Image (cartoon, rainbow, N blue to C red; front, side, top):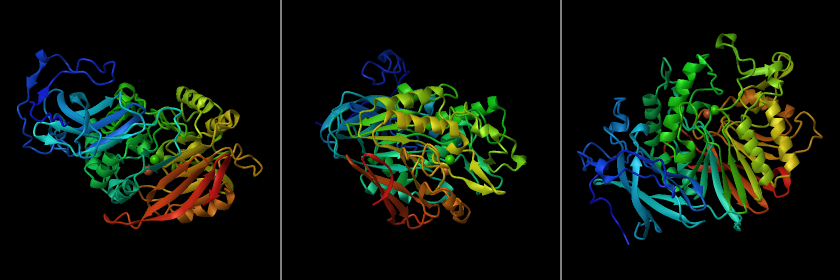
Length: 528
Ligand code: FE
Ligand code: CA
């Protein structure tokens, strides 16, 4: 039975409580209700930024939208063209894409403090099945989105298709890769960072987002893209971030540009808040508090796979041998030039997250265990003046933490560990080892890095010559844009590296560049 809320007046209410026992956001008593001036959205479509679902659980998920009738409003006092206090919007959740069999309906709050975004944490649904949803406000209705609940923990699951993506730079190309990924009907898409780029390098001087209104508008600009809107409307999202969601190569409170750390934390707070405002993250966990925001999270798909989504930026140690840009720093250091890189106390994950991840690995009962994170984990050494040199922004800048994690994987004998990442705008297929320089060192996991959605790749001719010095790397390609689509079965993972014909073409087509596999019980890349 259909139940429409459009006949009810649009109301604005103060938020009283963050979440009730059901996890659904509560609103204040009717005494505080006042009627909105405009039930008709004459100024523009309030749902023009689309809808998204994410953070799935066995009994629910988070549904997202953001009211923005004037999405790129230049007035910081009226984000998205909205004025006044919190706004309630209606929502409907249905059994069918036609929204005929409504199984849940009610009201959600678009919070003024968070740019009128909605993070509706829905619980109490059935496990392992799709639902469809939409939001309603006055005479406006959002597009219909698809969400799904996870299979119950431990429930038998035979297969899962998922995609992973990173690095969508608006100025570098169209987001055709998002459209083609949606066409493959994955159950979930993992967003591994650089969802936005905070700077526009094509402008001179370079334009950088630095404040809440500018980060908000950068997100809104991306969210207006039709291919991006489609993949979010059709496929649930698991989300983490990388540096460009805040600032290139930042680490915790340490800016690439040597900003005062206290000032940089103000920028980080603005970037984190705008990120939260535009992502289907769980409000009870991810609502930012100043410059702090938790995004690392764990998702269990029945007995088939457990996914740990990792935050590789917020808690990491300062880049080793941190020095002003006029040093000519290429973020590439040798052991002799930078002993700090090898210090045992350096951390990529921070103590709390590292403990949490180690616990996940020790306790998981899933067939496959995915560590989904932002940057290249395998070592990649290049020659610099005859010596081995290492990038300091990825795990090569944090080798002690990498060794602890790989040893933990080996000690726990966690079933079928696989690492995925992004950041480097290249495909990689790697065999992570306890000691990358020792050919006899055992392979303890398998790693796949996905290329960028649109961001330009690093020069192939600079990186490829070092491949013979890195025999644990089976494949590298930096010249193509796309994503990775994974078909998982109980005893086999198939990994397709998918590439668009031309990121500069909004109608680009898609093909498979390379296919690899992982066989259950045997870590390491195999040909497929
Ligand atoms: Fe990137
Ligand atoms: Ca990055």
